[in-house]
Image (cartoon, rainbow, N blue to C red; front, side):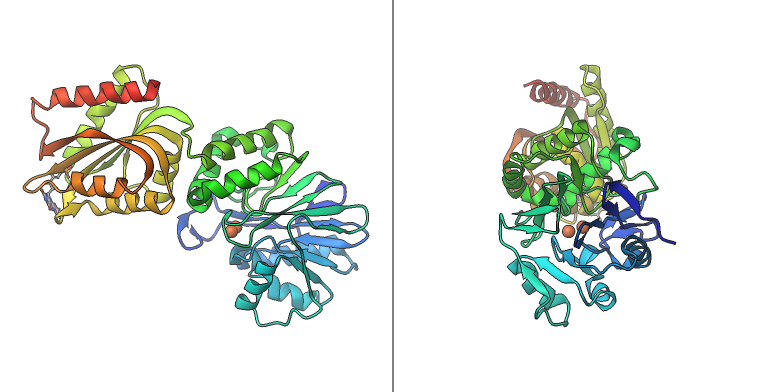
Length: 403
Ligand SMILES: Cc1cc2nc3c(=O)[nH]c(=O)nc-3n(C[C@H](O)[C@H](O)[C@H](O)COP(=O)(O)O)c2cc1C
Ligand SMILES: [Fe+2]
Ligand SMILES: [Fe+2]
């Protein structure tokens, strides 16, 4: 059944939420489901912003029908061609053969890769800074290459002051009736998922995020309509969105806290990790965390790395190298261009301690990451003599947190 919602005046939400897929894009756990947002403005001409993932296609078409009534669909703007939004484009064209597809040259080329329908007389190409009027509304196009695909663009509506931001400012999680961030328990229940979405989907492209933020700074934005998660409409929420993207885009830590990533087969490394956390906590640091990298999906680990100021990697040696989940996590940090942290390395092994060297090699690929010179090398179990090393490491962690 259709469940469209009015956002403001003639701007409607026509997207849908899915709670049955366990992984977003077959990669990221989505225990709270996922929203695939789509927006329509009923001006003199009608204009739709992106379609949706196949999983919510039915409700999307019902919403669209209920909103449009007998009116034609004049324009559909494609802000990027990733299938979690564009997979429905072919079906949309079958229902609305009258529609004109609006996009940039790269989007046009990509439509040709995903679909075999003809774009003759059906595609309106826009360039950076171009405008399109639908009557009372005038839309301006801002290209955001590599946030997070090459063809991404954002669209600003001068009348409603809405920014259609594509995937930027998106969040994991299905929407349940309340589509605005100010109607949700946002800080407690959504903020960390917004960070996890950023870190995993956009995190690699900090430079490009900072570039688009510079362009957006000149705009008077009253609504942020992202393709995933809640809509932001209060001044406070919009400022908070920009601020968090500035922090994450520049790879700056959010919290003066330490996370100890612990990779342990039999529990001895884990025991050390808890000892180190205890020593740090006893020095007045709050919210110190030990995370078991075997148990926690890497998307959450990456998000925690984006959040905290100091990171400790403690791992067992494994097959002449590094415990596989730790290796996977560190490679993910490299893949996401992770930067700007103070880190510590702790290794464990029973015959040939290889974890420390392997961790240093991988972490060495990260820009602007200061690896503490000393590695604590545990031979199976921490010795009494090594307790002092743990104390020294805790002191240094506190020093880095406070600098
Ligand atoms: C599959 C496997 C491979 C291992 N490879 C190594 C190794 O290459 N070098 C080494 O010193 N220890 C190796 N170990 C042993 C553990 O790293 C060692 O016992 C360590 O103390 C375990 O710490 P933990 O109690 O935190 O898991 C391996 C263990 C397993 C299960
Ligand atoms: Fe995307
Ligand atoms: Fe998306």
